[in-house]
Length: 336
Image (cartoon, rainbow, N blue to C red; front, side, top):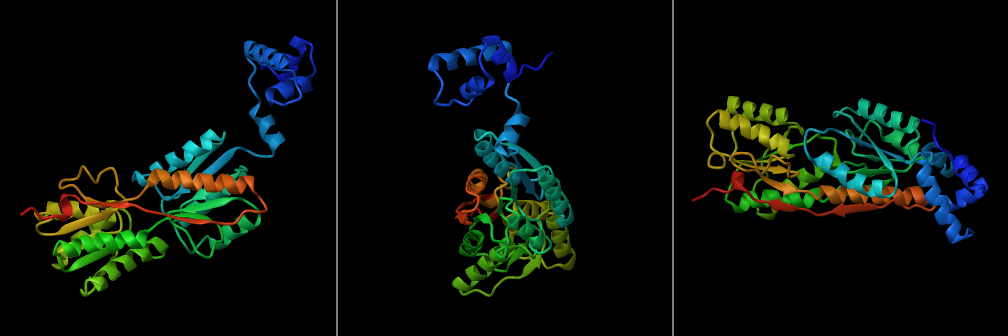
């Protein structure tokens, strides 16, 4: 089938190509009746705008790259859906890549997106050490970037973050108020700012209630990380009274192993997670977790990126910190 062009529409109506172009672009200097006739004829002929020509004329690819560490939990997909909603409304396509918690893969993903001339990037870092210079060089080359969830203070870019410190403090305080002693914190990847902020919240909750700070164990964000730590606790007979985990995957992994060995939750060991995964409500018992505004995180990141794209040269990086809530469920409350 022959591809209908702007020239075909102009020839059909015996008007100039520039007249047809003005109609398509809704310019003021064209008769309203002529514009309606051109649009009607174009539709009848099956004309569709050439996306490549549009990109060339506006010097944009209308593609946005999103890079995240994983898809195994619902956190990142929900963030991406929020971003995608805003970007699609503005005519952008979204190219999504995941790093599988590898800074090397993350670097290759970003390089591929940049090589394909995306108009901007939305990134959640795997590491806050290894790619910093690379991202700084991209920003100096005027490539718009917004970081979310995991970011670095040294990189002067816009960021959408969660108040990890406050909600880690609240989650730990919930366990303390329930009467639990010997609370252990299973941290996420140690070089991430969010890991440090959640650990600080855990520590300050103990200090606030004048309790000795519980043990802190480096764990990770994967379910198998929680399984590994729980099994080690059982083998070493060092099972605490309660656990505040870095995220829900880690918490659920630990919960699974404890239950397998006959421990009752929360009667024998209470568990609190973080990020409010889709599984939190459906575990047995249901998991207490900190809920993050995933949709809002994605939408806010997309809006910041579009602002940067549309205001090159006068853009000032912004950091937006969003709030959440603690969803208290069976895993941390003993029914008397």
